[in-house]
Image (tube, rainbow, N blue to C red; front, side):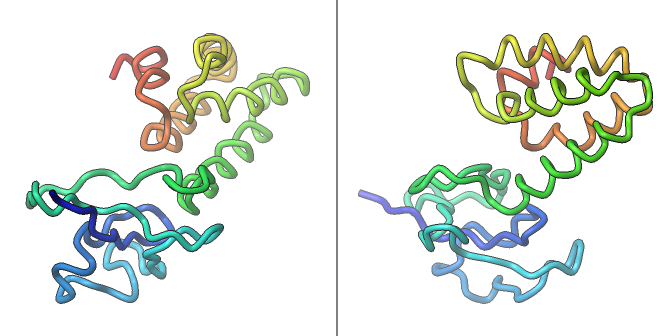
Length: 158
């Protein structure tokens, strides 16, 4: 029976290694893509970030997980992208204040697969279209890596 290794990921979400313990030669204190510091455990509960499975070693890396498997809190890269999406929503001139707030409230259900996700994706598509191409493209660039699979399919068809 296999076990999960620990993943090392920079605080911006770049996976350094999924096999922190198995292959210590790949450890890095800082990310070579963005220079950010790296972590190996949840900053909320200190549980190691789940990495690769020892019986299925593969050289292709999985994307960084969005949430801690132990406490359910989002990892720092998810928090920073949500913050950026909320700030971009505030900068969108084509929306009313109420529409901006509605768009921001939809974000939590776009990154999680919940019963509210279909409503959130419908609202997001409507408001992103009204916000204009530049804002819609910016939101897509921010959210595409952290949106749930159901939301990605519903909003962008991917």
